[in-house]
Length: 256
Image (cartoon, one colour):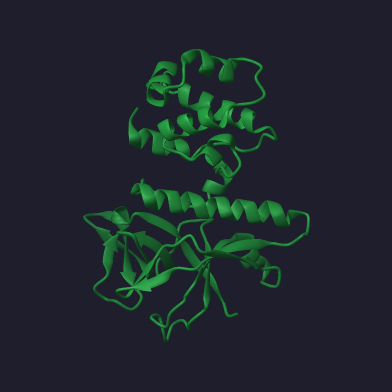
C-alpha cells in the first residue's frame, strides 16, 4: 500500500462512535473502499488473517484484541488510538488547517496531534460553557522556532466575539526573538476560517521550522501569486506553494 495514499486517508479517520470497535470498523471500511486497497493488501501488510478482518468489518463482533489493533494500525501507518477513534481527527476540525500539504511523517504526526488536542479540549470544556483553545509552546533553536508537542489550554471567553468565533489555536512566543513586534510570552491567536489577505501576518511551517511571516500577494506573468516574507528576517522569502503547511493568520495577540 502506498505510504502517501495512507497519509492522506489518515486525515479522515472517525471517532464519533461510543464503542471503539465501531470506530475501528468504519475506519477500516474507509480504507478498503479505496479501489487500490483490498482486504488482502491489509491482511498481508498486517499479518492479520482475512477471516479476522471480515469478522471485524462485516460480523457482529463488539471487541478486538489489542494485538490485532496494533498490527492493523502499524500496517496503516497510524496509532492504535487513531484507529479506534479515541483521539482521531474529524473532517470538520481539519477545516481549521488551511490547505495543509503532505508533510514529512513526523511533522504530519505533530499536526494531527495538536488538532486532536484541540478536539479533546473542546469536548472536555463543552459542558462548562467555556471556549478553549490549545496553545503551542515551541522552542527556539538557531534563531528558528521548532514545533513541539508541549501545549496548554487557554480560555478565551474574555476575548471579543469576532476573535472567539474564528481563533482555533494559540502560539506562545517563549523567546524575545520577535521584539519589538511581540514580547516574550505573548500568545499569537491564529485563525484559519479563510485565506489570509495581502499584508496579514501568518504562521507557516517550512523545513521543520515555524515562521511568523507577512503574506504578500503579487502578479507574475498575468497570474496572481502569493509568498511569505519573514517578519524580522528579510532573507526569508518563500512562495506559498513551497511552504509545508499554512497554519493560519494572526487574528489577535493575547498578553498574559
